[in-house]
Image (cartoon, rainbow, N blue to C red):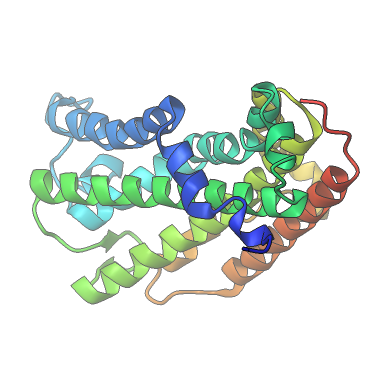
Length: 280
């Protein structure tokens, strides 16, 4: 007779399969694929103030975007990291627990029995995997479209000039990785909100509102050093990877800040869920 094992009650593979089959997951990935397509069309067929094409290779925003796949992939991250990626990360983590509660399926899962912390662990891991996958799909799609539309030119930075293929790959990987880390704070806020409410949209909205408010406060210079504790303060530190050499100082601080805040938020979420009276 087989003995009970908590690890066998709800696997990451099963939960990931469930989430991949949902329409909102397909819509999210469709959106990050569509964004580079729209930008390619804008660069190729748009018109500058002088009436010429935007993809003319000049050192302006659109000229840099059209200089090759590395720059075009970087532009996709630039346009989406401040808001779109935040919304999608909040959706994947905010719809985890609250989604089960809204469907009235959570109590049946916990009665299976799936231990509460196992339940949260699997939900958080799957949410983070989907967020990371979404980010990688965006970069890969933008890179391929940039390669097809603008050729194989290497990364060109106004701070360091043209870089080699190897260095271009390193810089893009560093920037992608850092942006992934900056998504941990809105993901953590959404996850905490998800265990505190039975309304998925409320959990997602809470994370988005906090990020928007933090952006507004960060723009107020009169706040001085108080801005250092805002989650958006280190969001743009990836620009330090575009110089002649990568400067790690501010990115290291941002890495520590985002990981620490995420761990604290998830810890609070676990403690709240341990004491929650699950009725849904």
